[in-house]
Image (tube, rainbow, N blue to C red):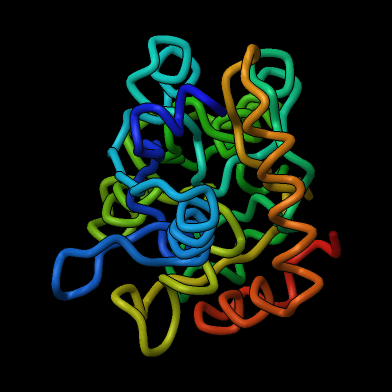
Length: 232
């Protein structure tokens, strides 16, 4: 943590992932994760800086000190927890299949989806789910890109985070003709720090404090993820 304090900034590795990290009309990064990172940086007495990363390179970016934390709805997989010092879980999530609404009724289980062409984010829990279920898939740079593929008809389906699906597809969103169907896996989110860092322990303490004083829930409610928050 002294490293962070001495340089005066907390560099947060993210992707465009509504409702966790995304830009508002003014170009400012907002979202549940972004706002929580801002609060933690403020309490630490440093500036926060958001850097978009290639999700597939998140571990390398962290080890190279290009970023200080990965704070972007990151699933606590075995690969992640063995490569990073991770915080306690702070959100529940699931990986869900996204399809055009007019085709959803035809695909109710994994077997019925075997011939579909999926789009997934490279290095994500969605890609892991595609592999585990034997799906044919193309790996793209971001979850948002996978939705564009399905909307354009370039891919038949995608696998994304349930929290993202709730914010970005369906009536009143940018993708009103898409819906999510089958839940493939359940999981939890955590923040990743370098192995030799005591930052994860500090963030855990912050999570506990911000949960107990209601700040975490208040921020979660702004982005519609209050039901997913894990008690600290």
